[in-house]
Length: 343
Image (tube, rainbow, N blue to C red; front, side, top):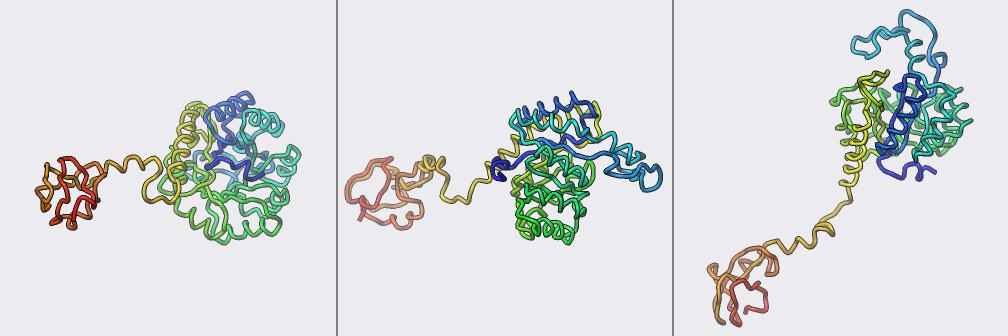
């Protein structure tokens, strides 16, 4: 099952998040547009404001960071605005599947896992802010299904704990995503070289959950071996949406898919001596040719020979070896020089 889900590499996910503005028709339009852009999957987020926080309107329940897109918002109201109605999940997943997409979600509490199991999602995503929620991770691991987990600002110890939690329960295929948990994030904060270290330390395939603007980080991650790329998606950034500022529009997502596929194809395999496609071009290398009409018995000097294209004569490395040799029979200008012509 895991191999079938991740048949294409990198596996490219369009995250709908709350950019549907709780408009069901808009959500369906986003899925159609994502399919047309060529992504492999769409992802929802499964929560309610009550499963995320408390309805408290002061102190730490207000977004206070000066650089936050949501500064001044109350957490409860923000999650209410961004949530996807649970009754939408099944019809949206069915639509996505009818268009050839994998459809799944990030659960944010135990009730969401129970709900998603009731509609038989094929895999799960653990969001970066939830990767220290060990009871949630345990519940997801018990489903036996593949798991994608964003590491975000998690420490090495926290990542190790989360991975160990999953492995203690079962053999769920697990992919870890490098993620910078700022929205939007600066490309210079991506630190993509961490992916290789993450793979080495955990033995897991790795990828990128990308909150930067543009496609540079995703393409670079693919070139560094990312097996999964996740990007937030919106139909029209100018129309707004809770995550619109760091989400890709359809044309941008299509460009990302093309660029990531090209980056993956460019990796190829370790190859020396030229690819199969290059073999025919080898004849245009240089070699040693006769540069004048010469009679038999000529003692070859630099005046008689030239290193030129094409490559049907002796390789240039033999230049010092042929000087001073004697022609056994006459040779014409433009004739490739070979060993049996000389003594």
